[in-house]
Length: 71
Image (cartoon, rainbow, N blue to C red; front, side, top):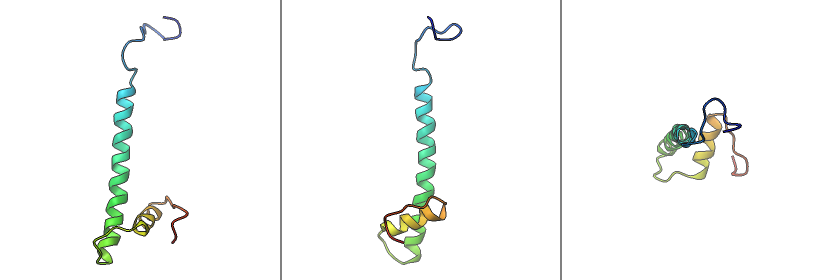
């Protein structure tokens, strides 16, 4: 029981499952925002295919510039 704090028995997941859910939730929101912006660029250009440049511009708009893909 040493090194586990007050009353800890070392049973259970230690919150790892909850942390995974939080991480997945954050990732889902981030991807929704990026994809929404990329699709907006695609629709504005009257295209049906989302290009890599649409994603690059969407990321740049959100302040997360991605280098190496032109633009």
